[in-house]
Image 1 (cartoon, rainbow, N blue to C red):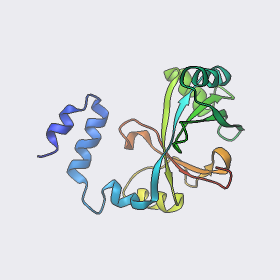
Image 2 (image 1 turned 180 degrees about the horizontal axis):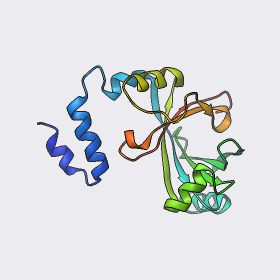
Image 3 (image 1 turned 180 degrees about the vertical axis):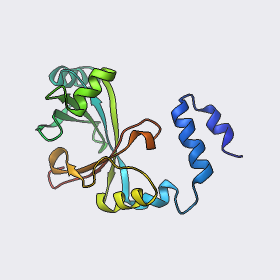
Length: 176
């Protein structure tokens, strides 16, 4: 009963459905904070799908004074990417340009155009996070984490389980 006014305030119906569902089924033992507890450290990055990586890097440098601090090609994920430091905060913009049209980012661009593709949380133990989420009935896209930026390990939560948002879990590697 107490959550209803908050749910009505959400304009995005998918998120409202998720919140209503959580309100009806979430117990203290299954609440996200309990499930992931101290495993989530912070927002690691926000991933933006871009058609032209060099132009996007230039834009964020010129307009916001934000510098690219890491660039790489990830053949497995089918992207050329850059991590743009957000003023030393420890969080980044991840600019993602597809290497091929059939890559996840290539398909995203064809379907949606440029824009926010994912929200990533930094976790201390991606395997434990995956186990806890699966135990709570949350779907992960990969059975086993994959290699991410700078040697990190990554997995993604199905967008249908997160109000339409693709959520990435990132456990930093030695290079991160």
